Image 1 (tube, helix red, strand yellow):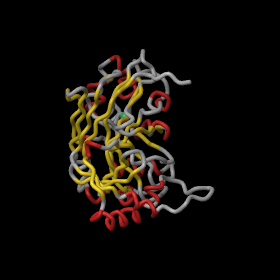
Image 2 (tube, rainbow, N blue to C red):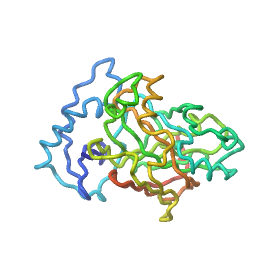
Image 3 (tube, rainbow, N blue to C red):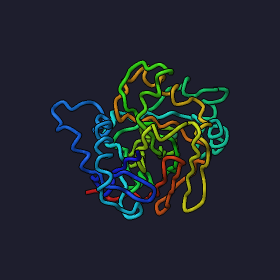
Length: 296
Ligand code: MN
């Protein structure tokens, strides 16, 4: 099932170019008491919500996919984990660009086969999440901000010290994720976590729909020009290893997101740009890049 959040707070099932409104399935989420369970409410109660959505589907109202606003299906993960330098060609090609490298990455990654094993994962703030409708608000207009298209793995079953052999049992589904990045030398958790720098969507595609998450072609276009195009099979440290590695130090909670790294082709975006991303089995979404907005 492809579950999306649309028109602010509606829950939809995406079927082709149609969205079925199954918002009533959210009744499966019990009222929160203090302290709330750790995790994203949709993922904490996903099984019951999917069952209710199946029931509602035959008489659900239809909307054209192109006529609704799309928001991130995930709203409250306890963390967004991300793999640095997890595609070989991204390291080989993109770090040759001084605007990407800043004299740091190529040197640090030279001769390192599996950067994740050496450098670990980094975290992005939950407040950096945006959906396609919100798009990206450039935070430093005088600095370079790049797109990084990544496969986003969403955790369903909680766990700690999850062995590789059982890792995939903890995956609830997949989305596309943008790890938007200010280039520079600051900590990744600063450069990659401004508000709106983690665009998620278009839908949470449950794991049963994706036969092999390491064989998906994903692509990104800026103003119609293709910039990234790769198979998830090219990731260096694969999804089961990323889950084992992450859960050595973090308890994984339902709704936690792992961004699995970006393939080659990252490039700058500026206000006014339109970015489209697509991935077989997951879908596509388009969002805009805008300038920094004044705040009171
Ligand atoms: Mn990235």
